[in-house]
Length: 235
Image (cartoon, rainbow, N blue to C red; front, top):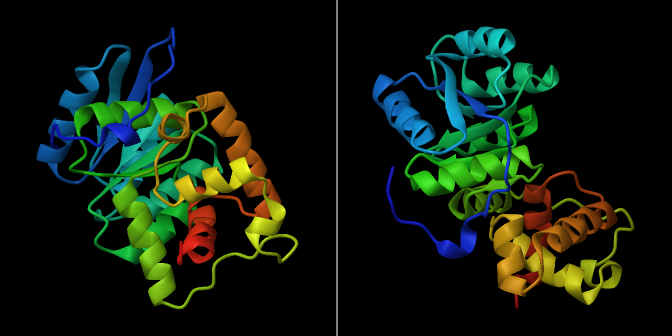
């Protein structure tokens, strides 16, 4: 995990009075140790437990009910996709995937399973902490590199971008500011980062994102990013 970060894609976490309990899931002990160091170095966080495969992750998550899980994808016995699906189906915890993003099928699978966000395992500690705050506040966090990978894979596979509810060009459906937000969504940055880029508050961004997704008839930021890529590819 590096100390480098793109300032534009960081998140200013809100203040939470209670301790945030984190479950660490990865089959490599060294990775879990690194994740533990990141979590324990941040004020207001504590490690609620560790698991080295998906089966143990589901069992432990059910027992300790963590606020958020840092989830690996490729693990023995049960992978992170199935573990995420089971945990999300029971609304046990938020799930933030830490990935190397080198297998697109895993990314699509985890998104469909209910993951609340994706970060690279090489992400800076402060970005991981900021992402956990963002997910707990209801944001969907997508590392720009992960968003780019998903969009590229979808387009390479000739997967059509989701159509809007009115089957119209987004330029005909959205206001000027909503189009600005849609353009930003294709970068994978958080609401906070989008707000800084556009000079508006994070609360205002959340409102615009909600309206954009509603008008386009999509349920995730990745779907919106696909539409944005197609809409603005010649801009």
